[in-house]
Structure formats: C-alpha cells, structure tokens
Length: 255
Image 1 (spheres, rainbow, N blue to C red):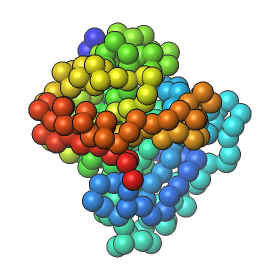
Image 2 (cartoon, rainbow, N blue to C red):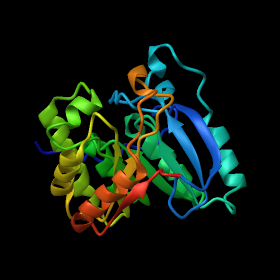
Image 3 (spheres, helix red, strand yellow):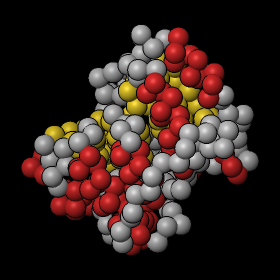
Image 4 (cartoon, rainbow, N blue to C red):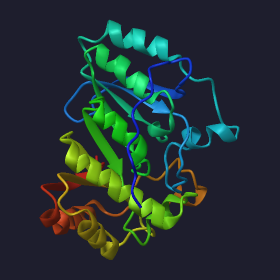
C-alpha cells in the first residue's frame, strides 16, 4: 500500500482546531538535549493495553476535562522563548489533530524547535509536516514486529495496513533528513526476545533505536497495572544484541 502526501491546507486555527488536555510547562526529559515545554493531545487511534495516558486516549468516551487554550499556551511560549528551546507534541496521537500544522507553524514563528511523538500509523499526515519543514525531531513508538503490532496496538486499522503505514513512516523519516528515533516499550507477556530480534531485522538501518522500560501503575488495561517489568539487565542485554542493526541502540527509562 502506498501513501501519497497531501499538501498542507491554509492556516486557520478556527477551522482546524487542536485539543490539548495536558501541559508540562518545562521539561528536561521529553526533548533530547533541550529544555522544552510538552503538550499532550486528546485522542488516539490505538488502544495499547499498557498505555500510561488513558485519560488522553479515552477522553472522548466520557473521561475528559476542558482543553487548554492554544493561544494561552502560545503566549506563555512567547514569554519564555529565551529560556525554552523547543516544544514536544505528544499524546495520544498528535497527528489526529486537524490544527496541528498551524500550531507547528506558530511555534516555529516563536523561534522554538518542534518535536513530534507519533505511533507511526499516519504517514499521510506526517509527510506534509516534513515537506513544510515544520518538524525538528520525530520519535516513533513502534509497538511490535509485523506479526504482533496489530494485536498489541488494538487498533481498528487492518493489520496489513498498519504494517504498511509503519514502514512508510520510517521510510519518510529516513529520506527527510530530520533527526528521528524509533522506540519500543518492552512489555512482559507482549514482547519476548524473538520479537525484539524480529524488530531489529524489520527496522534495521535506523539511526537511533530505544528499548523502553515498561512502567506498571496507571495503565489503560487494568490487567497491566501490577505487571512486573523486565529486569534492567535483561533489557540491556537485548539492546546489546540489537546494536548491530542500528547506529545507536540503548535502553531508556531504567531510572
């Protein structure tokens, strides 16, 4: 399946809204190497059972709160633009927001960099942002190897379409020249050693790949809330085994 990029539509914040349900005004964690502000967007086309932002994913199903005013956020960013270096757009899935291109433009006009977190399923929406040079860094969460990604994501997308979309997303990033990372949360019971090996084969040649430690606690599926995470040494060993596939491969989230 091929995905044909479409041009960005004219800027119009009224016609193309965004719904921001969370806002971390300052962070040193979400944008590698930069002081940033992080915006958390409503909604996702995935239902990963271990998702630790269920309030964002299920907001439209009655678990919501009033969204932040984008103009209020932009005013704050303008005021503190000399202290901040960038803005991280995360969720949920930010690419579902119709007003995302306009918001990216307005952030860039403040002299700030834009980092996007995505699940890799919407290359047709990613492509115009890359083409318009509205992104400075992209992080893609790839849930599992081709034979498991659909079951883990619990999405309504057909399995073959999801695999094709993920591959198209990675290809877009490789061709874009925009710094990017691929990452996978390693959840016991969902991903095993053979699955990670398959991920290496599938995604090999990528610039940067992170194995992320699963965090029990608040999860979309209550069955995962008390699930013990893999030991740190196991994840370090898996990253070492995958290091030949990527320019950089390591573990994140052990602290």
